Amino acid sequence: MSSYTISESEAVELTTTWRTNNPTKKRAFCMDKAELDEIFSNAEAVQMRVYLGEDESGIRPVMVGVDATGNDILEPIYDHATTCPTNCDESSVLNTGV
Image (cartoon, rainbow, N blue to C red):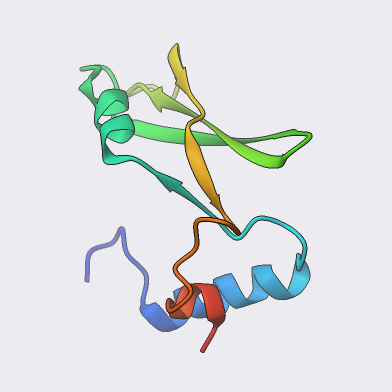
């Protein structure tokens, strides 16, 4: 297993804990591959940082590229993600815990 991954059982435990502790909050964000590709098309971007923002509709991710020294790349800034609930995989163990 890569050092960047966790096991399914750990993922289920983490997401179940979130749902239990935050029953009315968003469960997940779904981002288009094209958006992620754009972030990483900047040659300086070696990571992506997701800030949590909030407006009248609830929590929103604010995504930026990050350079090799850990600094945010502030152009462009992305926020186009769909949220769960509404865009959920109802059959996923990460959404249901079962």
